[in-house]
Length: 313
Image 1 (cartoon, rainbow, N blue to C red):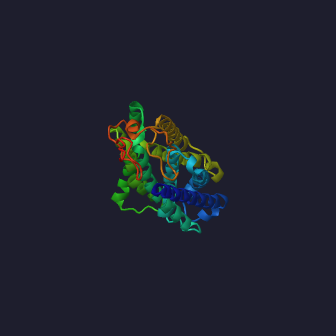
Image 2: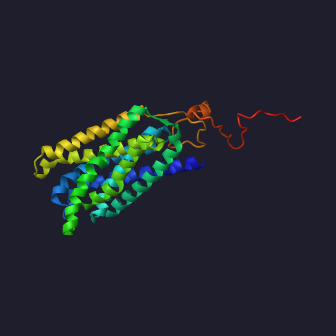
Image 3: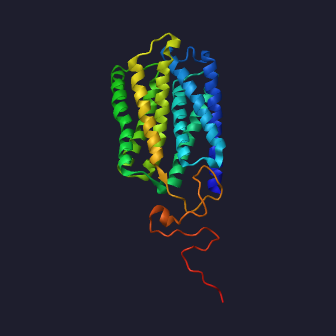
């Protein structure tokens, strides 16, 4: 009962986050005047691209929420990656103090996405980590891909911060990137990378979440470069090529990781169906599914299968 209730609550949260995102980003897309005076002119193409990607993200989350029991663990990992994108995108607006008519929406999406991401990651690891498997060779490739982000952005952002720290300058915009990347995103990539190098099952499960987040986020940057002519600015190779290559890398890592990731059947199907992998009453015992010699206790009201039945005289 508890698993089903949590799954139902999570579906409702995904639906709320999706609807709020579509409404909020759609408003900004149709009426870009709400950003005037609140974001730097150079970032307006990025605001437009973020709104476009966010509408698509919100619709996808709504679809996953409405799919209900048909959503398996791999689709759930994709959804968690999309929530991570919403956390990052609206975290920028919240931290940068974009105080327009939609600011309360920004706060709501930022908070909802953060909690759904944390609770969802804990839950999916709890339900699937002991059943997850990934070819060892690809696990190392995946770990290397996850490590690439910290190797690039830790030196880059710190090298930009040090001169500002020396001059004690308070920059007026885009300081949110330093906060979100250095406090949340880069440590998450680093943990997943180290976890996979150490053969931790939780890292194997959560790696595609980070790859989906990275792919959607970086693609938003590439799209922002492509729409620059609409704002009177030229497209530059330096602005387009790096995010395009990173997007392709993260898409490839996400797709390959999800294709090679497998889950052995669950020995005990949930009492109520929810955002969990589909299981059947014909699933093998947990010892066979996990490769463990541990005997699994029977559920309440059932005589354990491994104990002999004694008839009362």
